[in-house]
Image (tube, rainbow, N blue to C red; front, side, top):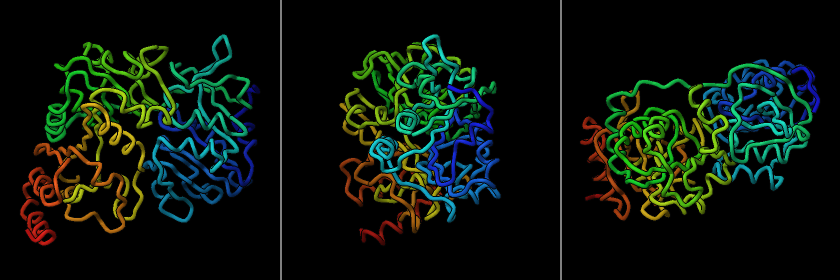
Length: 422
């Protein structure tokens, strides 16, 4: 492995290359910025990634003229370019992105990652973002690494030997953190409703944000909970400290927390550092429905941008504008449905921040159906929880209207009558 400057490392990337960027808290921004500094020398460089942190210069002018974004999940830093001719989005389950690399559908020229310093055996850790990074480094023609002592050494499969790194840059900067936000009264109500569905011994999947944290804050009297998820954040730490999360009832990796990435505070990163309790696996494993369903009482908590009166979920577009991505929602919704005693749950406020009802007669024109109505069971807002499983279209509409914001229920009832004539 050659230790070089960031500029020298970036010089390995040529016009027309397809380049993978590690994401989330591990986004290697020093190398990314060095690559963007070469925008006058290179052209037509394709960027492949899921959510990244940082400014994403390649998505901004004048750098964007030399790059094209082909995103597998859309974050705020690339949202604008993905919705232009300079970028695009690949609708794909998180569980299947590895197939794009391994089956040579999107062969990678270069993978840019951030890793821990090597241990005495020469192995570096991929830190808190193993997800699709592991298959990327296993298949890319070249691997360029940002070696950083701030990267936690995590247990599981996220390792790479220094002999498999073509060149590296040494840095010493904190990895990206997310601060814990104050939970609102509405979010707390949603959290209570969802928590009431969770049984002792359940295996949880949740994302990042206030609603998952509100749910977790209401689980302190639960017992023997387990974690098998695509990601987690600080919300689980108090439950581990109190002995609520033990994983003792899990079938897959009993007593272990299984995830493919984590984002949160420095306290979270300190917790996972060299901690054999937490296993970081690639997304092809964590999000495999056949693996998820083996655990008991899998309770998957997901969100939605909008849901229509028949139960169709849109979670990745606002109309035809690509807002986020399919991600792992369907992987876990289906896994929970097939788990013995499992519960797939959608949790969301009844209205948007602009006061628009998230329960709608029809999805917006151009909206993507992220989860079909046949897959949707529990839906929770601050006004309660309903279970749509086994309900016909008219019954679904009635149930969803009962947890809509009161200001919109009369109009939704009129729309339901017009649609179903009943």
